[in-house]
Image (cartoon, rainbow, N blue to C red; front, top):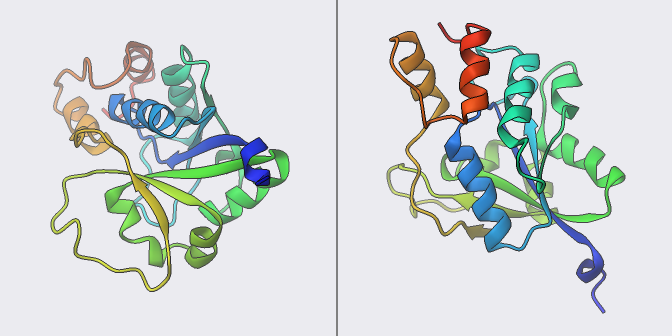
Length: 197
């Protein structure tokens, strides 16, 4: 009998979540349903290696993520990367989580992040140990790439979601409504804390 059959199946969803939005929640819930995952752990990035400077502090991004997932018992949020000093790498984070939980882990990413997987820290080891669940994104030539190593991945069967944190921040700065782009609890928090103005 395969030992993995007895393990929990957990999705790991890392990201800046600056701010977390409806698209993130749709991706997470769709991944949970499509791949029969017991839970999804959202991990707001501390200092991500592949992103520009974060706008909101780690505390704010963590709090917004907690608010966004509060009504879903299958979602959790971890502050493992927020608490860490220095750059956060998915490989290192997963090594720590693997020691805490006996589970089969799936890494949830957007296509734009997936295609640059070879540039990730310890990418080949990640590819050996984990399956990627990839959300489609609007990018050119989605099929025109090859990895220099073998990668196990599954495409998420959902429509492309064209909501982005960048779009939301732009709308806030321009004084436009972001209603329905983020959960109401996150909307209230953003305005209460005067984020992204």
